[in-house]
Length: 337
Image (cartoon, rainbow, N blue to C red; front, side):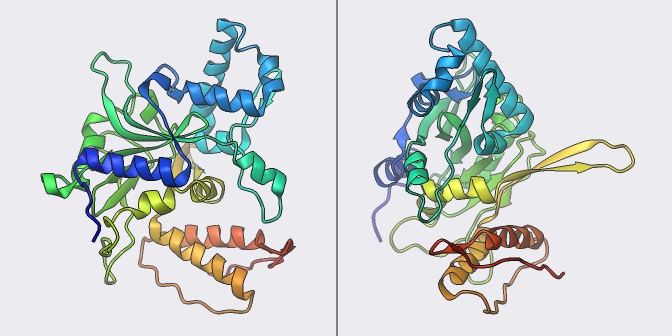
């Protein structure tokens, strides 16, 4: 087995080094971060200036502090209202400009779309000082796309007698959900990570925060299998945080669902992020259909409460969009339950 530094700082370094050196991320710093708006301001404006200079010229944000503040206030308000997922997917309108905040993954033969996607800036910041409080509370890792935070991580390790549950406890007790970075829909997901397990939460709510497992499973049970080439949880950054996969999740899996109480008409919102087994099942089926075409049969083992309905919906939605050599593989999908 490869020797691995599993101290918390070592785990940070391991993740950041992989993302930067193997996956094309940039490494951010606290100097780039604007705590007032919970953004990496440096990369946000670099992305917008490089990709949409005419729209930025219309807004005049680089000529007037007032215009800049108006733009940032609008951006903060749009994320609060619609959520980071929708803002990334659909951009924002700030009169008189219409801004793309994220270029979507390209289709198989779309060279222009591929070039645009490559202009997205994926970045990671260690020990992010997110709070305006004088204590300068710091978060282990934060993942940004084009300067907008999408994922936070708290890291622990078992060699120092701390594990994933300590990371969960830290989120519940030390990460105030009133802080802008941790407010609902501001980030897509929050990961608690150690060298053996991963858990996640989509809505931080103090001690009421609900964390679900994000493990591969092992021997028909919980946990993760041994990893002969590293630590057991490296699939998180080597698979899930890979740029194309993360973009794919944003576009096709993550979502905010609205529910309306029929009696009170009160609306509630739930932010959904796929569990690992859901991603694995759907992506395996999609890959097989791409390779073998239609007409195959599959038996997928899911336990009660494992999110079968979401898995079916994600699969059906993406099957309709599958292409091979520029042609649709499937015309329609019928779901029988």
